[in-house]
Amino acid sequence: MHVIINTGSMIPIYEQIMDSIKKKIVSGELKAGDPLPSVRALSAELRISALTVKKAYDGLERDGFTATVHGKGTYVTAGNTEMMAEQQRREIEKELETAVQKGRSFGMSSEELRQLLDLILEDE
Picture (cartoon, rainbow, N blue to C red):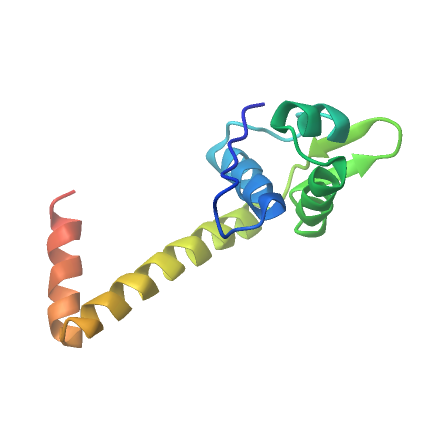
């Protein structure tokens, strides 16, 4: 599995791993029942501590994206599509909040921001 991390990022490496795997699950690249690489294999591939990968895998399991079978490995769960959709909505919401804050800093009104969003949506 191809996971890219940016060691210069302010985002912790375990979060980058979680985000990358979540995106692969939500996009359908990883499906229910697919195995994730072992903690040791992924840590060797990324040249990072196994504890960092373990922390990411624990977070994925806590969030309901994976399940770990002791002695067998970590697998993508069938998951709740509603939960996955909610994850996507939260990511979009963050991006929109950032855009609104930037627009406000440039002095744009709510109506101007709505019009701009409408224009963007029309261009699709």
